[in-house]
Length: 291
Length: 337
Image (cartoon, rainbow over all chains, first blue to last red; front, top):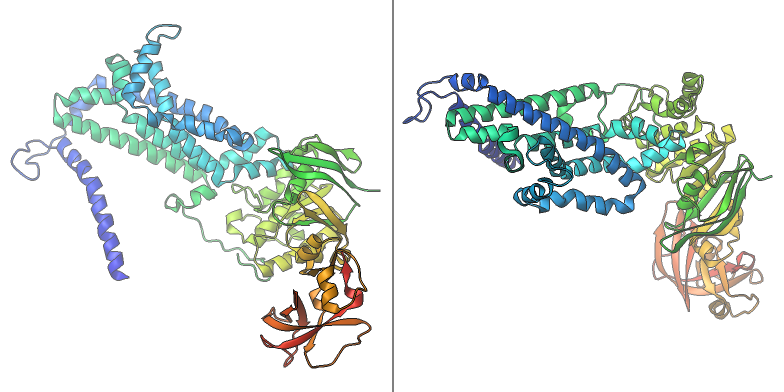
């Protein structure tokens, strides 16, 4: 038993080291001054960060990326949430079709998708190639699998069909049933889908480079550009962008689970974010019942 | 005057008939049970009454009003689901108050508190569903349906997920509450013992049809066909030809004969006869003995048929496997099917 536990600890430790080392090295390189012949840097400096934070282009690229993420993920939630809910609860026979459509992005490499999009949207009724709007459309499709899986799994976990049945029998309209019963119970699922999408879009390069390039510079395009000038500076960009993702994720999780007095069944397992107070009320169970 | 009328209801899925010309009537305050095996259509019928399934043809009336084509929220029926379907984001109080809030009812607090007392959940008002045991969750589901004062209460196998002891307690609780409120109730179960214990009337269903209806005593003592006889009480069902050969008599006529295991007497093969005018004696061999506490169940092999024989478990009066025995069949207990 003891050996088995130690073995597990070693495996987890190795995994953590494997994941953390590249990030730690990048962090170290971003604050390194002279680092040529030694294992650790000979001197430390913040000049790469100072240089980065004095660059107007960085703020512009960050702003563009955040704008694209906000619009795309927002659209994704607004369009996909009711769609998946309606199909899961009321038209379950069409679920297979929706699943196929949602999984399509996995089957189309970005380069193929980008070439197709450029051809279709270069002229004709909707000439949006080179504008951020073509990226919004492409990104919407890119995050579809995450949105679909996260929301559908949450709906199934809470047994949305039966919750809606129960609410309707108690006098709720379909919309009231969704708003008061289903939605509060799938927030955690929506949040997970949203965060996965944000993380994915933050690091998306292929579509951004091929569809708009420098005309609407995103953080990844800016990063690629800086790769040729200085490794220290690109390390500072990577660390900054990781910090922003961590900050956004942490804030959203904290705000959501702080409001959530009691975890929904789907969030119960993720007790790392939520600790229940012990339940001390008097038990009124029938003979044989456990509470 | 019937309070609930189901008239010629038919329903099918993908060209397969699930409910076939179902008709039944219930009196106000009656506790009726739809009893049948999985897939016989009993839950579909219940969901059709609730409005959660559309019927292909036929009509459903409650208190004289045709509710066949109106939405579930307008039907004034309450339903308790097998998996409870409590709202995980709401505590016990809010779950029970939900329907009243939707209706914008008055005195919500008083009515919910009264209902919490009725189902014995005082002190649990602020608990969330996942903090309650299965039995407690079921009582919340019941209170949530009852607080709306529905015209008909529908119970879809509400006790099947609970263990035996809690189930027995809740059966009594459910019946007590139903009698106290005099609410017309339709209960769905596949457990014949549960149906017998709780119901005023049982409707036995098979393959989308009601095959027999009546009081528990009627259903148990007078099954109309082989299915009911076997499903409801482990009857010994024999073809008349085999029975004639076994008892060397053609006194009874018909297609099949059904005999309850507990009316059969078992004695040692050389132990004489029990009033031959009232009984038939059949010799056999004990193939198996099982004990369910107070009852000993023998499987007796005779020439041409196997019989189940249930006897009360008396100390020192038990036949071993392989024993030569004689079973006596009381003539008046033979049911011709």
